[in-house]
Length: 261
Image (cartoon, rainbow, N blue to C red; front, side):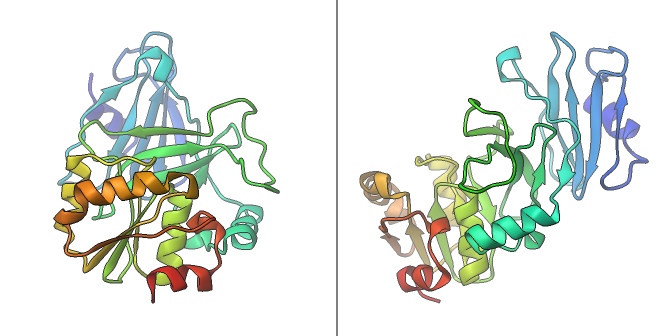
């Protein structure tokens, strides 16, 4: 049994459709959920002792390794749903974001599912995010971790929000990265935290941006300067940005004041 068998089982699904099938890894009946999304197939086996899960991209030249989660890391997403008008309005009112430009979904547990993509736009994972922001109409799962990140083993821990500008802005979270992209037209890259390794820095360097901004949350200013000292020399130009609020919580004018247009 293999991932290829899973893809074959899902071959006739249309975008937004899903079904339960016999798990192509453990063989248990009707224990694997497969869902067709815009750029591939999500699959999850929720049988005890298996937990195979992953994403099969439509991109033909991007080989992805199967990753079977240990039981404590298993996460059943269920059928991903597209956002509602209430989500679009909330993200516009709260962050000034147009969700129609961003492939965000929701889970059956009322959480947000944010895709992780490479510079080429290939999906290599997802972040399941609790709706912790003020006034959000979704309830999520009280007491659960704020964010759970699932990413292929070989992929750098970066979520790319590719713009047409000549700058790259490194931030902590995906909402801030998308805010950078939609506000300035530059590329926002979420570190999915506040650290970076040599692999990730090399991927950023390969983009040959004219300038790289490191803009972490206010309580991580010292970490931003450490990253600049370690990896800044790899880039053509690198500068740390510090503000009292996270990028996602600033207005468009405030963001443009920091990094220009």
